[in-house]
Image (tube, rainbow, N blue to C red; front, side, top):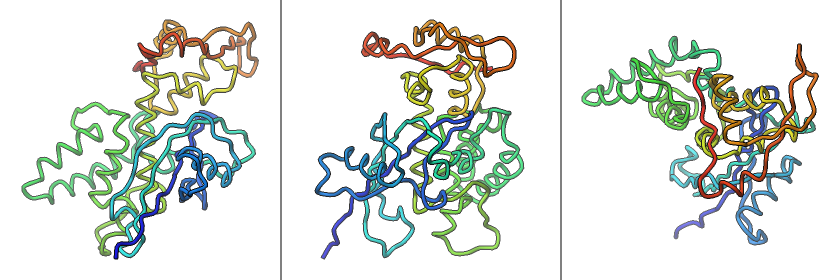
Length: 303
């Protein structure tokens, strides 16, 4: 007799604080907020909101469905009940009251932060480990080498910040993250390369959320869900850079934002920065109605 399948609702809840992209976690940073879908829940999203607000005491604002995870071996435990997880991406502003629950997403994916250039971790640890894995692939060695170069920006291939999930899954396939080692027989030549691990496939779900958000900030003004009501253009730029994990060209970024008419001046200035006071802006909400069909773009202007 087949066992019943449970449906779990799980949230990738993101905020940007102090120039760092942070995700809400539980259990000392090992899990994402989640809970079962119950008959009392009117909709999937209302169930998600109920669980997240109950567990984190943080109200949810912007939410969109992310992906459904249903692989049989996703927990790494053969005897575990079959669970389908419906994941959501949520954007919010950190209030400071739940400081313990927020973790930088670069703690889990340290190879993703290129704001100061390519992380040394890639050159010294990840690239050599993946090269050994590719060489051990027999007839698949060349195909593996090409995948490594394409996903990690090696051998002259440009870095693509949107391939967060592909990079994590490649490291998992190569047995180089803790979650993969849990499912494999112990071997002396295998060790996790870096990054905090998470329960079951929560780190894979987080990688999916990061990839979605990195792509979405380029064509929808969702970044303003993470900003305070009033902000400077530098604060907006730092938020985009934190999410993308790479720097943008200051003048080009400001010109693009102004050309898109995404913001308007408040008439006030901020004295928080050194030197001349910076103008304060706010998101121009009318842009949502004006460009509902055409879309709104905030391209990442390269340095």
